[in-house]
Length: 317
Image (cartoon, rainbow, N blue to C red; front, side, top):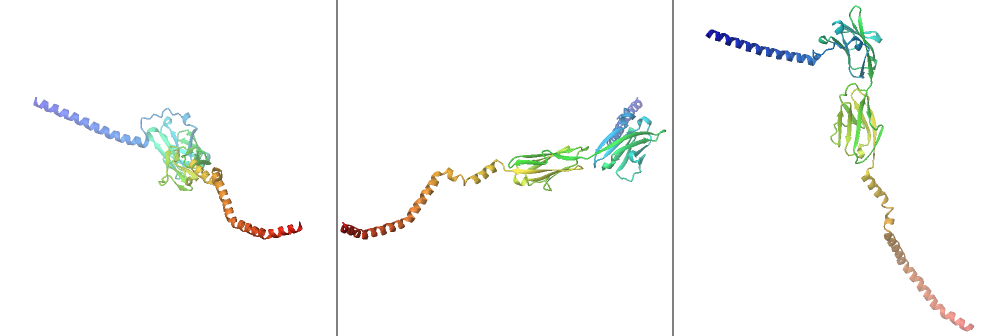
């Protein structure tokens, strides 16, 4: 009986050990597969629905300076080796995992569990546009064709090329990146060739969007006038000219200074009359001595000449 009990206990311990080991193994396997999925994608993705017809003549579009990826699935013919060619130039790019092009921008990847061959082109140029061939080494050879379209991303500012804003108002400039196939890493704003994204001395802020950026100035001043440039990464920049006009407060102050002198006489007729009266008084005061002297000379002349005139007149009578 004792020996049977020992055997049962030993069996239970052994089963528990197997359970712990199994869980540990499953955990390690999960971590390993999880890491693999992060690198090359999950295993349970089913690409069997992708047919030759669906892959053939595939259109791939990328922007200048971006990365183009051409995906060639071979599950319908087995995991055959693939040769990539630039068909319109009859240029061999890769064979299997080996790159034969002198351009270091080309690379090839083979994802075995997906039976996928990927051709990647980094720092895409306009000259990279054209027809590419994925040729499988079957007998007879099977080919799939891909067309790479290359576009040039460019920036656009709403309201360009000129914007007029009054002092004291809020300014909002929005820049959109058009024809971009991937979000720009950064978008820089320049004011008269000076970058202002991280300007801390001015009341402004830059709001980043996925395919754009917004510059906000809370209170426009005369110093904000000038040229603003939106310059996204791997895209053509664009400019807008800001003209700052006098706001209501500045206009009222300027108008008061200009019209104050002209309207003073209209607004104060009493003052004008007073000044006129004072000028007459000044003239009267300054001319009084002259009038007195003239009066005295006439008086004396008349006093001396009057008896003579009277006597002559009397003798004649």
